[in-house]
Length: 185
Length: 235
Image (cartoon, rainbow over all chains, first blue to last red; front, top):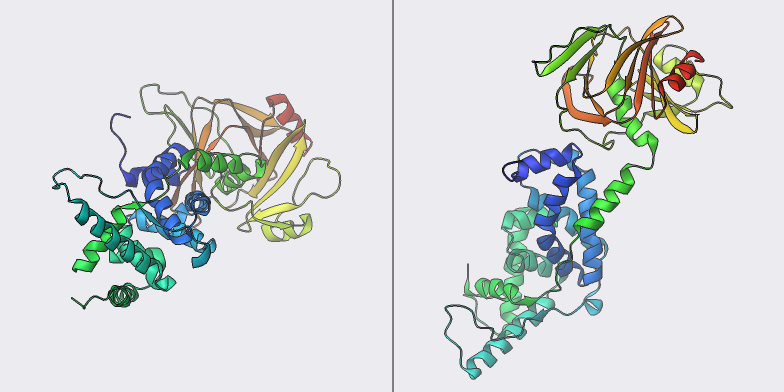
């Protein structure tokens, strides 16, 4: 093969039973799949299991995948479903943590220690506020902002209508602002 | 995006998430192990492929310059010899062999008596689309698949593409037959709505096709030619 196959071609081959094509798809999407599963289950071990099961099930379900549709939301929907079955209660969830702060990013001015400290505290508060959201709002906020899925993808993944995504986001953001003592923008 | 939303996106980028494991080896191992151990899984795909295989013709002379090296057609079947096989599934992705019923019920469904070699007990018969009857037999230490269907429905033709496979005309109890051996070959088959299904199935086993009282018989499995012929003659 002279050129790398694009995704629709890989899907088509996988649909015909080509496991190498499916392997390629797994490698492309396993990062986002694992992150999605992790954020929804709150456990690295459960997330790995959920994502793995999802790729096995998705392969078997390829016959039902609509040609021309976007693969990623379809896959993530299966991942989310698997993750949902393994969801942990908030108390048993692994706490989300932030990377060590003050990693210089190219182009950024080096912040003063005070600014870095303040920024770090503010992020911790925001994260804690997200963690304390009701599950539905937390999942929606997580998909939309942490995983940076579009509203439409978020709706597909969480199996709700787009309008529901919008309303959950609105309510979630209101709640976060209230939690942080901020005025609505 | 509001300022809060932007902060959330930035926060997501700064989350310390566990490193994503490489899932591909485990996923592939599971898919591969699921696909292989049951002979009837591949047989299931074959069964569909067989739905309308009819009698088999004599050879034509191959034209080595054409992509299709040899083509023959008889009744409901056309067999093509091609230089390269199309991409094919290794593993059955289609449903099962059909409904599991008794031999008598199967006969009622397909409209002909299910012929079997002498076997112990009464093995179940799988019936697909009320047209194809399949029995899984043990022979010479292997699981082999004996499928049969009435050749009267010539409209539901199928197409069999053959790669580097030996194709040899044979006779079974005086009836014409065809022995396909060595090298994988593929079957592309017609759906009942008379459109070609896209699925192409790769077959590694040897295949014996023959006619018996207007019924097309097909034996598939890891048997040698003499074993397959011997078994077929006892049906």
